[in-house]
Length: 494
Image (tube, rainbow, N blue to C red; front, side):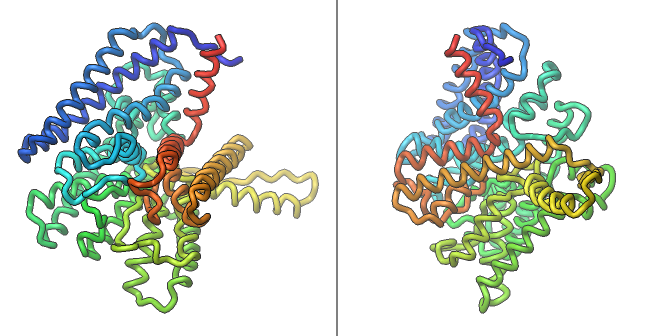
């Protein structure tokens, strides 16, 4: 039986959204402080005005929509899907006020790209963007990568019984610790520990490259947000190529991989067994897919020098597979790649990283299960008719492949492929080639951010809205969105 919502459900949802909006306002204090410290007068008022709007809306929702029902799963799922839209719209306000965007839709695109850790951008004159606005652009990736709702869960002491609803709604499928709130806190703890390490390492490298101390620290912070949370934004228009540093590129690769690894695996390696990284099913799947695609990519780059292969091939592939979206290619970038090279990058973006990580895409676990069950069926046909065969995989422990796990893997695989194809069709309708249209569609849906030039401020409005939807749906992995649509339909049927 489907739950039939009423006005009390709506009031409860708006009340929760009000609380989350006030949480967003708290995060916006960071760029406000940066504007004060840097003496950026106009940006200060951009964030001050935005903060007033956010605070007014948040308190209004709390006042006019009291918590009339105990929070349930349906409230949690709807709040997650609506919350990401509301956060991106409110997060776009200071970006739009910066005058670096042609329209509010462009600023919304940027904010959704940040919160979904995608990295596609429509900003103009990025090289002259203020420090405070750059801080906000990159902070959205940290908030989104760690989890918008997880940011709230980590400080909640109540509603533990339904916390799992928020957790699952935000496309997290595994608990690390016995309860979800403790899991949320651990994920944020991991993020902050790596933040200290990352900012330190990046700062040293940037100072060695000749950047001033204050600029080095800010750029280091932003590069960490973009690499560990696999977001792909950069403070300069040339992305990572701006720094002309092979050492920096190597370090970004390390943090991309760390961000693409399951948080559960981080916990396991830290506290239990470091050997797990060699036995883990997702890591083995990653090694197989990455080196298979790398072999094809090297074949398409035959004749190029070793340095060129790393700078052009390996780096783009690991950036695509980890879902980060960094690029060290200046000028035309990926447009100089052959069709085979682009296909390799597309497949890497399609797959993405591990479940319960900061990446998007189909995910290694699901792809591994799809291939494993395919070979399992072949084995079953080769065995006697009455024999029973149960396949297993090792993910932190030996796990039996149940029908539900297999069904879920195939369902999400099919959903992602459908949305990849649908976005590509829209690109073709607007006159772009099928390959380039597929590239951009996959990049948006898998929350990667690499681009072949289709994403630009002059692109059609419909294409902008399609990519916004793909970034949103891909980050939440569809489930909470479908539940929310069912909630809305049920509400209007009353």
